[in-house]
Image 1 (cartoon, rainbow, N blue to C red):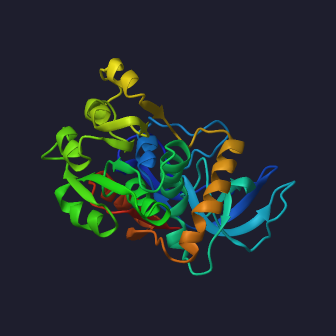
Image 2 (cartoon, helix red, strand yellow):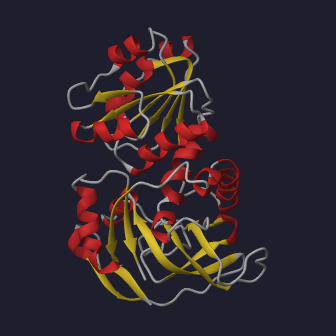
Length: 328
């Protein structure tokens, strides 16, 4: 099968389109003919050799796929060859065929394209898991969502608007992306270039109450302003550490305000746990895609032969929403 391969770890130049062995679905898995996948930031980190796939998963890049079931593994029921599906995968998305666990599959709504479906699993499920399942965000509450134009953050904004329409969303973004962030549902915008410590701005917005939830991928640099911006019983959910992994924490403030700091990753969770997450997402969020309340935001669709250009766009942070790789 055709696939994106790497003969070493490193920069964009290590990506090569070549031939790889077609995978065989194990018990509980299905083989998917992949029509589209998407570029996610962890793909870049894995390409650099800093994010190995879980044991047993494909070493080929790609964390989500959209396509058609090609074959069923032993023990799989409730699915048929030929069904349009989208799924999380531990690896292998940048290829013509990929295996996925049946518990991780979702049926693609009739009015959704493969390119749109390729955007859903990694970014929207990550946002749903951390904002709603872990962060316990409810309608009428307030949140800070960092990284305005990225795939997970735009997904979080769209999900909050669809599932908690009366919530207050404070979004940090670069000047170039602030207007588009506002268009998809942000109530307040903070230019993170001009205001790296957003504490006072958040206090003004919330009348010194602070917010209920913060979704953060920045890490160390934002720990202090994040905690200062959290309200009573507020939750800080950390899903990335791009600015570093070590920072000082005011434990007394955390204790008095009964705040929580929660670390979260999706890829390394057990198969059964990811299945439960997908099931809850299917129940609560997927209907919003089916009725087009939520439409995945796609910056650009590249062919598999343009994979280097797709990675370059993400590295240069020139995208808003998702970057899609068309495989077939």
